[in-house]
Length: 124
Image 1 (cartoon, rainbow, N blue to C red):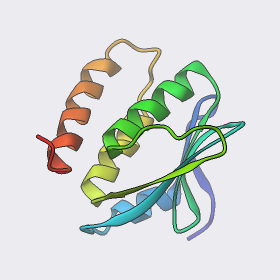
Image 2: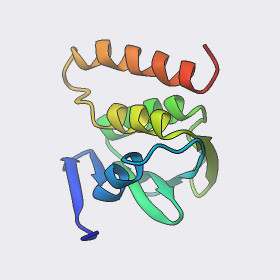
Image 3: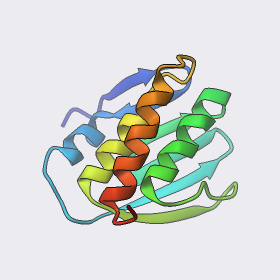
């Protein structure tokens, strides 16, 4: 573990290498925390950053769809919510966070990943 971060979109979303490590081993339940701070929205696991979505229109779109995939809403500024999900759901959420929302084709992928995440959470 190098502690380096894998940049998905430097302007809008950052997904850490730890996120990739976390999804590499299937798990039935992960306790994640999603928080909104002045700079944007972060998703963490055991205090380690998985995703950081900056306060830009694309970053906020990514965070909203990521939260939806996790089955939670974006918390109010300064607040944190918990999400308990499988690694399969987290994989979908990370994929959603990494989409390029300036590209219309991303929305086709988005709908499919949201549907898959909902089914994997038991909602479909």
